[in-house]
Every structure is written in C-alpha cells, then in structure tokens.
Image (cartoon, rainbow, N blue to C red; front, side):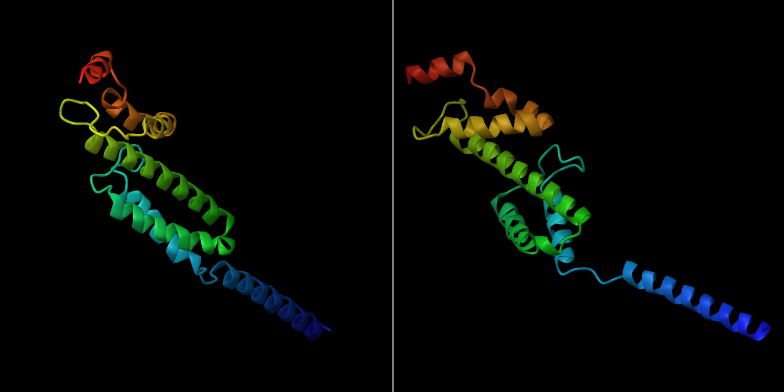
Length: 166
C-alpha cells in the first residue's frame, strides 16, 4: 500500500513538473515574423524625433528617412494579424508618430522653401489650406513644436500687407 502511494505521488509530481515546463515553453515561444519589422519601425520612428517624448523633430528628419519608415510601416501592416495586442498597440503608436513626423516635415519644408528671406510667399500656387491643416494638426498633437514655429507659420498684418503691394 505504501508503495502505491509513493508511486502515485511520483506520478502526480512528475505530471505537475511537466505541466509547468509546458507553460514555460509557451512563454518563451519564438517571436512572430512581424516582431523584427515592428522593432525596426519603432527605431526608425524614434530616429525621426530629437527626444524620447516625440515632441521635437530630429535634425535628420528628411524625405529619405520618412520613405524608409513608410516602407517598414507597410510591411508591418501586412503582418498586422500576427501581432499580439501589445504589439498592435505599439504599431498604432508608431503609425501616429510617423503621421505626425510627415506633417512636421511638410510644414518645415513649406516654411523653408515657400517663404523667402523677407517672409513672403514665392510660389503663387502655394496651397495655404493644406499648410493650415498640417499646422492645425501639429497644434493639437505636437504643441511644443508648433509653438516653436508659430511666428513663422501664422501670417502677421505686416507680411500680408506687404505681400499685397508686391
């Protein structure tokens, strides 16, 4: 009788150990194919900003960097179904920050290209509505950056009056 109790105890104990090891194997399961792409996207998006709070653009924010991040974003989007809920949340944040970086680049490019040294528009085909939409987005989502360029982005009376006289 004692022998059967010991054997039963060993069987139960070994079953518990195997169940525990089985759960460990699941916890350390290999990463999905999308994980390296998501990590790459997160790094590229982080490089578009000068700080970890994603408030100010990096000096290396340019069309090439945005294009590279866009390509990786589209790859991750195709693999979106393979992402865990936490990874999907990270992906969503990356998408939002990439969108904001595009708006920042658009506004910076417009201010740098479309305005001359005298702060007058050079291009008669300039689409003010697009610029205003991008700037309004930045006011709502990237307030610190928007505040830093507000004096250039909003027309003053003297600029608009001098523009009319030319």
